[in-house]
Length: 301
Image 1 (cartoon, rainbow, N blue to C red):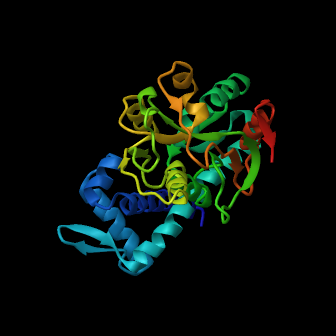
Image 2: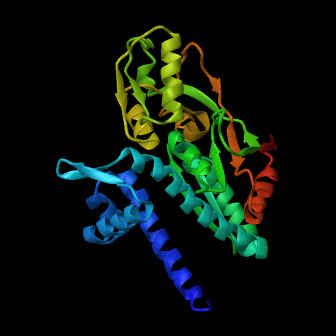
């Protein structure tokens, strides 16, 4: 019986590695991309996923031309695998935090604009107050951060309005305003139905709001999709088109006259930032929540 202890530990580590390979394969869509993401060989990825499928008892992937794709069973299993890995990471973080919150881990996720313009100051001041807390931050589009909270991959999310079905608790809020902006040369003859609009990447909350504004105007202007918040703002400054953006994120450009606010019906829009925690927050995450609430620009929700 005592000999089972080390075997169980080895088995757990092996299972975690297999789950990680499978989850990354589900995200990347190919064995080659998975191997590159995990810095391992392609045969090791195939072996890990094959061993996992044997444990489960049903095929999880199938050939798709020269590549592979998840089976229906694999698609279903991938969601559970992601949650299992997230729960394990959450359990480790919770145990470390409970033992000593000042030496624990806080796992954060933020939408792009918040990650670039809201969180940096918070992270600096939090690190100064709690230097031994380990901070991890993921910056993704809106459609990416909420699944991370649902799958226990992060403790806290900073984003716009949470979806109705979000699994966490809104802990704090901060004012945020969306405005239509363009280069000074865009003001003359500006017409929302004819001027090109610069859109964020699919999955972005700002993109969805911009499209909603345009739909409310019953207009179909030319649109250009760019890959990030920074690319959209740079293109607007260059005069490529106009866009909807957080006013806070472009305040220096507005002050310098490189961008101007444009009169678009339905704007400006109040879209507050929210700090959302997991349903059961760790002790170290609660340190971060309290730190945020001490800032005058944030208020309890």
